[in-house]
Image (cartoon, rainbow, N blue to C red):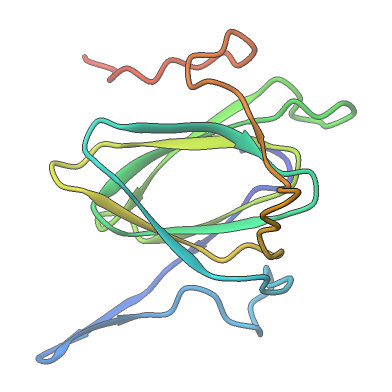
Length: 151
């Protein structure tokens, strides 16, 4: 696991009315603060990568479908500099992933239907000066291949 990335296994509580799943609580050990909460969706086979933040910490949960979440650590002085971590999160593995600042991350929808991801970042999005830095999904700066691994 990349240094500073944390996960929280989520508990789904189903009953005859539906289900409930808490994602992030202010009394969680990993809670920092809430800047905003937003939802984003990704269609099957689509890759949304790479991006990172210099200030913001992300708290990501896939609530519908499945995504292959990849993270890359470019941080000088980090014990995991140059490492990649890959996690499969979503309906079959309900987990919150906390991604610290300065770690590149992105995901690919690997489910048959649209994936829905909820993010609870620590900062609000500033439209005039976003804390967002991007690389193309196939950047040669990140040693990662988004293709399916057969075998």
